[in-house]
Each structure stands twice: as C-alpha cells, then as structure tokens.
Amino acid sequence: MNRKYNNDGFALPLVIAVMVMLIILAIGAMMSSFGSRIQAVRTKAETEAMLAAEAGYERAIFWMSQQTDILGAIQAGSGTGNIDFGTSRCEYEINFQEFMGARPVFQVLSTGVSGRPSFTRVVDVAVMQETSGWAMGACRVPYSASSLNAVNFVSGEMIDMQLHINRYNDSPDVADIFINGTPRFLRKVEMGESRKNGGSDKNIVNSSGTVIGSYTSAMPCFEGGIDFDQPNVRITDAAAVQSKVNRFRDSTDTTYRFTPVASTLVPASSSAPRQAVVQLEFYVVGETGYVKITNHCTIKCCPKRDSDNYTYDYNMPGTGGNPFKRYNIYSYHYAPDVNENPSYQIVALITNTYVTQTFGGYTSEPGGQIYVNGNVIIGGQGPPSNPDPDQVVKGKITVVATGNIWIGDNIVVHGDHDADGMPSADNPNVLGLIAQGVIKVIDPGISNYAPSTANVTYPGRPGQSGEPALTYGSGAAKIYYQPVGNGTLWTRVRTLPDPTVVEAALTVGGGGWGAENVTRRYGSTTYGGRKEFSGTKDDLIVRGSLTECVRGVVGYPSPYEDGYDKNYFVDTRLMSGILPGDIWFSGKYIPAPAGWHDRSAND
Image: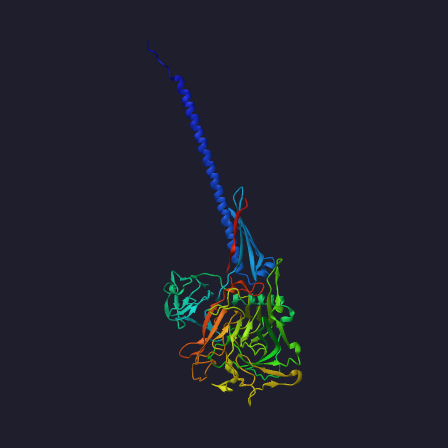
C-alpha cells in the first residue's frame, strides 16, 4: 500500500529555527560590532590622552628651556600650565625632585584626559640639564669693539669633548661652525641652527669666508654624530648668569666672601688703572688640601692698546652700544703686609669652605665655595713645606668672580691620574672656575719687557732703576710685589710651564677662555707677542669642561706663531656637578637615567 506524507508540518519550525539562528547571529554581530566600537572609542581616547600628556611634557620642557633661572622660577610658583585640544586636554607641572649629588633633578608631571567617560594618562619624568664638554655662544672671537671674526677648526685637531654651538642668526646664513681641512670631532656635536638653508644644506666656510663644502660633505669629520635645532646655551644671557652668581654668593659662607680694595700706593693712569684682586694659592701638605687666600691685593695693569688691533684682549659688555671692550690685561700684582693686617689673609682647609644647599626639603652633597666681588689671580710660590711648584687642588671647590680670573701657573687636581694624564674616574678632587669677566692665562713676560715696545708702554720689571718698586709704603700700608708662575721675587723674570695644564670646569660669562697678549702682528709693529717657554708656541692642556660666550684666543697660527697650541679633553667626572645647586647654563633638559614613567589613571 502506498502512503503519502504531508511535510507542511516541518516547514514552519524549520523557518522559525533558521530565523532564531539568524537573529542570534545578528545580535552577536551587533554586540561584537558594539564591543569593537567601544574598544575603538576607548583606544582612541587612551591614545588621545597619552598624546595630550606627552604634549604637556614637551610644553613643560620648552618652558624650562626659556627660563633665566629655573630654580628661582619654581620657587616663585611658576612651572604649571594646561593645553586644550578640543577632544582632549592636559595639565602639567614642574617641581624640584631631588639632588643627584650636586646636580638638581626636576620632576615634570603631565596628565592627559580624553573622552566620555574620560580616560587619563599620566607622564611622570625626572629630568636634568644636559651637559656639554665645550659650549659656546658663538664660534667666533672678538676682533674689535663691534665685530667678531670666525675661528676655524683645522686639520690635525682632535676635539674629544661634546661640543655645542649656539645659533648665530647670520646673514647670509652659513654654517655656524667653521672648518678648514679635516678636524676630528670624536664626540657628539650639537648646533643651535638648522641644517638646511631653504631646501639645501648650509655651506660650511672657513674664517676667510671661502666655501669649503656643506654639512653633507663634512659629515666624516663628525665621528660622534651631529644634532641640529638644539636649544641655545644661556651663557650669553647676562640675567641668567647674574641670577646663578647671586645664588652662589648667598649660599657661600660669609668667611669666604671677599670684596677686594686696591691700594692707592700702586701707580696708575687712565690707560693703565690699578685693579683690586684676591690671590688664591692651592697646595697640599701631606694628604690635606689648603687654599691660601690673600685679600686686598693690587694689580698693576698693562695699558690697553686701543690704537691698534694686534691682540684679542676683549671682554663684555662694551661701551657706547658696542658688545665688547678692550680691557687692561694683568701685568703683576702686590699683596698687603699680612703681618700688619693679619685679617687680610686666610690659610684654610679646603673642606672648611664646604656648604650645602637645601631646596624643596632636599639637601645637596657638600662642596667648597669662594665668592669674590672683583678679580682673582691664581698662582704663587706656596709654602716652603710644599715642594710641588704647581697649584694643586685637593677637595671639591668652586671659585666665582664677578670680574676676571687670571691663571698664573699650572692648576692640577691631587690624586690618581690615568696613563693619558686624565684624572681617574674615582678621583674625588675637582675645581670649578666661574667668571663674569674673562678667564685668561697671563702673559708671564709682561713683567720683564722693556718699558716701551712698538709704541706700547709696559710697566717694566719691578725693582729696576726707573721702574716700579718691589715694595711701596711702610707699616700697615706696606705692599709687596708677588711673583707668580715660574719666577722669584729676586729675578722677576717669569715663565709658565710648557705645557701649561689646567684641570678645571671653566665657565666664562663675560667673553672667552684663552691666553692674554696673543698678537696678530699685522702692520709695522715689531712686538714679539706673548712670551713662550721655548720656541714659538707652547702647549695648553685643558682637562675639564668649558662654557664661554664667545671663543677666546689661545694661539695664533702660521706664519705668526704665537701663544699656545690647544689640547682640550673632557673630564666626564665634571658632568655630575661640582658645587651645590644649579650652575649649568644648558637650555636642554633630558630624562634622567630610568627617569621616564607613564601610566593609566583608569587602571
């Protein structure tokens, strides 16, 4: 028997089942899509919050780079701000965090917010000022009261210091570093300027203005790399220098703050005035470091040679709207009779000058400080118990002068040195010299030149017939000629060692570091220039760091060999600071080691 089945009863449940399945799949797809949308919104909000927080950090770093005195600005309540990006925003603040040794560390805290409900990201970074081995406001030397002349780095020179050169804004706009040949820059070079002028590399020229290539062609010279568009070092900002000098003065023990007064007994004229100076002599007896400080000394100045352009002896600021002025260089000096005036001289343990600075509840490591409202001369014969003829520093100390600092001897730090002469990494002894004038190595020959050479009048040798006396006055007013360098009271014929060695961090707020009386010997002059130890040029070795407004001259090249050949080496120990507080002038702030932290405030 044949049967006939009716399938109509199965169609409806099947359709319903399929529809349910499709609805479930649709709901799943919608939920997945909704979840993806939610996740996308969250990711977008978190990304915007993070970008906003990073933008706040960048704004804070830029603000720090523009400050004359970052510690003073923070103390005054500055260092906060906010940015509104429409769909996101940020708030940032800058705080003092701690001292890392003598070096201040700052906290940049930036909070970025985005979305509804809001998502928050926090960037928390410990930053400090970047340090350079050699930083300069311009790679140029004062050539007259109103002009600067380019200075070449030349073939054969090996610059083993991280180098920074500020943006000069010259026209036509050529590279702010001047090269003649193929010098070697072993460490990183930072330029305040951009690499390109318009769409092409800037030309590199030498001091004569001749184009010798471009940044591209010179790249093999920069073995440590080169960075552009870097913040300017603020050594050219007189207000920045003054604020840091003021903080140094106020934190120095009053026993070691000096304002020298010159003796009126020393002959002077309008072209060769007398100047007040404090004499410092560093020495070591046994394992103890001392500094002998003689206040109220008097410099016999060499007359300025305003009528010619044979030397580079300029400092700043100038007069009559000029940036520079020719200053009276050091010839020799007299010291008061400390037997009659014992308060005029202090023989101190270097550790007695130590102070600390406290900021935001944190205290720095101790360091020695001597403040002179005037000039400083470093050099002397030392005590009979000290057989070392050099100035030897044992301890950690910085000297600040509102005038010039003159160097009249080798200055070295006590303790271990490596085979190449550099103070060893674990050597704790360091010296800082900071001047609002110039820091210069004296010409030792001034004291025994003839009274007149090439129409230039010199003071002459003290004690000779017709020349200044070895002593002036009597009793409490008596003053004595003071030999520096390798000379004696009786011969008055001085030299400086070859090589002359300076181991210090040098900061020059009123010009450049260099040597005095280096001459170009142009024109009809027959003057022989600076007195060398032997031959035509000596060697000047700097193991330390250097920050200067402009370049200073240490020697003059062929054919008029004069002064020094320079040999500069960075002492990396100085990068962690010498004295307490904020004395660096870099406008660039970088994260401290392991100093970057970011997080979500929603987690």
